Image 1 (cartoon, rainbow, N blue to C red):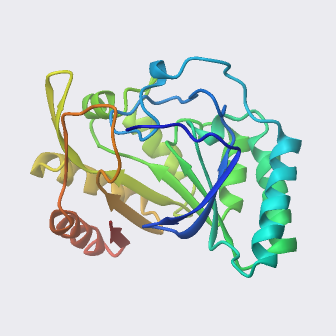
Image 2: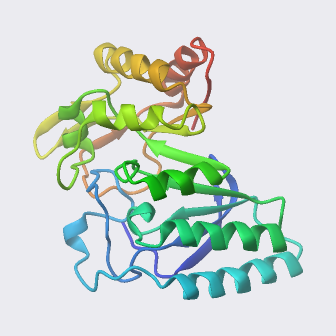
Length: 256
């Protein structure tokens, strides 16, 4: 069953891609706020969670993060990573850059071995302040699920305008200082077939990976409940074959 994150600071959880991860949710704790409405989102559909659409206060985020990190360090279990995720798109927060500044300062003070990660759908990277902030974190993880606008509209259901080409050009501004993350799946969405594992899809996506040349790529498939119940998980073996094709481009790639 899909569910929202009910706290500003959540976890830690064991992430299959990042290690022991302490989550930071900048979005409302009682509703969802996202520029995508992905068919596979573990938080459910945007429309399923109406309510107060208020970003969490910067000072409150800083206070709670300090308390939690201090407790974890005192217990001898510091996190491997502090991850911005939660109930939507974290980079939509109007003070995102300042929140990242706060987090890096707390990390350096309390648990300098921890990495700071941001899981983003890349819809806000046209904003210079967002790009500046993302360039400062350890893992700037940006989503690109397909090379085709039609597939993105089906899988990710962007709110407002979205262009794969524009997103790729903005990704190139990072000059490789980013991680590309791609969800592979197949099935149907509202009766329409979707499959971004076909030869056509993968070859077009690989061309964009070669253009962006991120420091590494993460390919993964469904691991939790999804709001769309007609989606199918892609096997680890199939993901690994895609990862091998990325590695052939001279780019590190993990499959999970």
